[in-house]
Length: 264
Image (cartoon, rainbow, N blue to C red; front, side, top):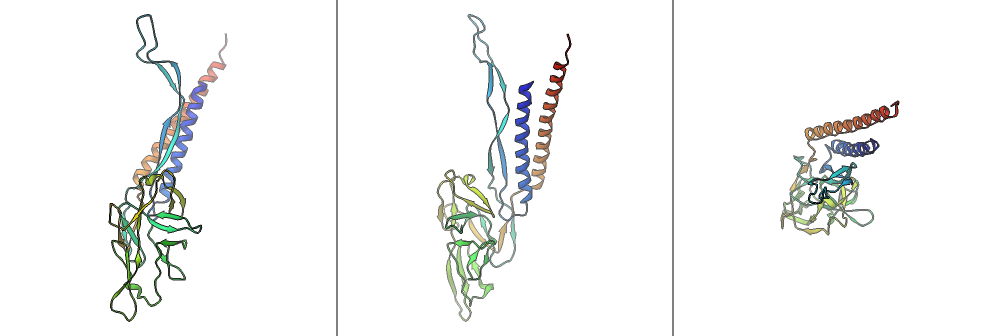
């Protein structure tokens, strides 16, 4: 009975993390480019009361053993990179990735962050940047004399504009896309940004639309891939699992109480 108390406690702690993860998914249902996460669980060690195959007599052995589980633990929180719903915005500096990969963002410390959020802006020096002012990499600077409506990003990442007084388009540069062998291994740092980790592998940077990389869709954004109905079902399941584990603790406590109150 004492074992049951600790085992059920691990179940409650695990389901609390599950609820925390689901709550974060729901909180970010309107976050551009957000990718939902899930918790993967693992069972804990087992108490081996009797090993399978142990001798039961000189000529026989037991076909199955007695193994008592000691609970559960969260093994990982995995980010799911299924595509989100595309949204046409019509805004000049919005761009969406259609496929696998990430935009590259230069962080204040000089490192590179990665994001699916293409809701870009222009800073006071007319450089393409994120909502936090972090510069897009490779850098794109827009001349003062550019007609804003002429700003175009091609499916291959080429940025072109028409300068006032000119009839031809001018190339300002080309955006690239980074892919990873294991994108789920990227580390989230907030602000819609991920950074490289030993588990993610090195970034494979190249032209959008080539070698399996995402192409770019101008004046469009990617919504979160959170499905509210699925998350609500997962939330109810987690709540019921938490409740059942609490009932296990209550039952074990009542059994201990009965044992303590036995009289000869």
